[in-house]
Picture 1 (cartoon, rainbow, N blue to C red):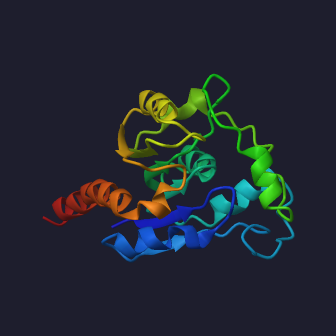
Picture 2 (tube, rainbow, N blue to C red):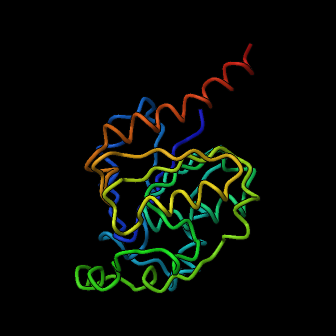
Amino acid sequence: MPQLIFLPGASGNTAFFHPLIEKLPQSNANIVAYPEFGYQPAHPFVHDFDSLQTYVLDQIPADSVLIAQSMGGIFAVAAALQYPEKIKGLVLAATSGGIDLSSFQLEDWRQAYQNQYLNYPDWFVGAKANYTAELCKIQIPVLLLWGDQDLISPIAVGEFLQQQFPQAVLKIVHDGDHLFLETHADQAAEHIAAYLSQFAAVQQSERD
């Protein structure tokens, strides 16, 4: 089975994924911590969004499925584009995935984020990655997870992404807001476990 690599959102909170990981059937999971986010120490070579992205992508091993929350989806999409031989699958939860969101009706999270995380860098707030034209190049299975009560990344964003990826399915977490991976871990884990089962089936067929 591929290794599960979890990419946090802009909060950098690695504990956010713990309820979900506890409910998934496999234990080969690793959460990437971001320097200067979530009480992590600084890194000498991480000083802006681009260098943070380089750092994150360097932490991803071969034969990985990436599970990304919110802004972490930008890193996941970048990894799939830059290292297609390493990335076996993507699970994108309530994310922009590095697309232009100006045409969507979204709740602006930036001011509240800056007020809450006073000591954090502002790299996520100013992130302007746009991979829309390149998403069609990602030829791996993609699971899109969205909460039906999410005002920051509404279902319309997930529907748009589903149209851009060649192999994508969209699943809805009922009563889930932007943090549903943590608050509705049971529903999310059920969808992710079903998605991961395809990799187990492929591995079994290769053995046979």
